[in-house]
Length: 173
Image 1 (cartoon, one colour):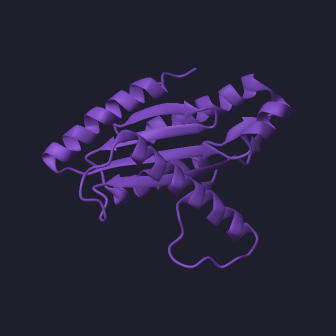
Image 2 (image 1 turned 180 degrees about the horizontal axis):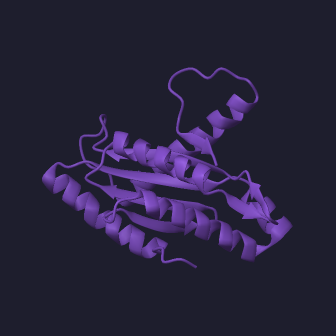
């Protein structure tokens, strides 16, 4: 495993960064990345291959993230990135750089480049409709909601549905 923080550390850092964001009126962004087809890869290739896949994902993310960004594995198929002093535009730019990083450095499975799909959801603070800075669990709920919207939008796009409004962040790698 590459050096990536765990959920406990991430939540502690998020608590600290939320306090700083509130105190200094500075922006804060959180990105959730989810590996599409996680169960398929585990069932087909085993956990060792999935660990290598996540190591590859972490390497690409860390090459694109800033040193002060916190990268953590929250769940089996989820990676989180906490971006202090960053707004949604900075988070979206990071997602685009990660997407480009995967295009330049694909994951190879059985000697062939494997088309891995990762979905990304972004939440940034301050939220325009919130009077107070939300807590850690609320921020993660918002990020999960954005992630699920991105996954749904990508599925609808593949089916040829025309979704109304801006497209949530989702990309294939």
